[in-house]
Image (cartoon, rainbow, N blue to C red; front, side, top):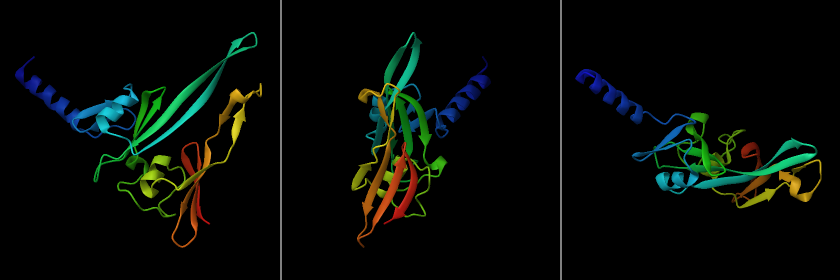
Length: 191
């Protein structure tokens, strides 16, 4: 390979490394890169401790024939990282501990800086990580108790629908009530 092509290849490599992380495949943490396929423990080691973790379990049923069903518990988590002022807040989604997606919250309309916990800023479908980044942790989380029960009706065949109300009391005696469904904001109102 000629010297000119070697220089071009090196320049392209550095350009690719210096580009902002692409949604859904990699994120730069300092001088290191976190990518889909890595483990969530690597995310903590590379990017520091997340400011919020939303973890849940999914029950997956697969028919094996002859009245047999395989029930599998799948652990999911969304880990939210704030790399600091002026940097982009991002989410790392893991399935069974392995990273399946990396998503920049700013690209989806999320906050650059913490604060701004107003009804105008809280919009439908914002993730719980965006809510925590804007408003902090709620003073109270109420599980609405909704669940799906498998045909067998056995207690172990129940799967939570992950519906909660998050409560943020204000100094004037009112409370900001956020309804969260499956990790996303559904409704926000003052009561």
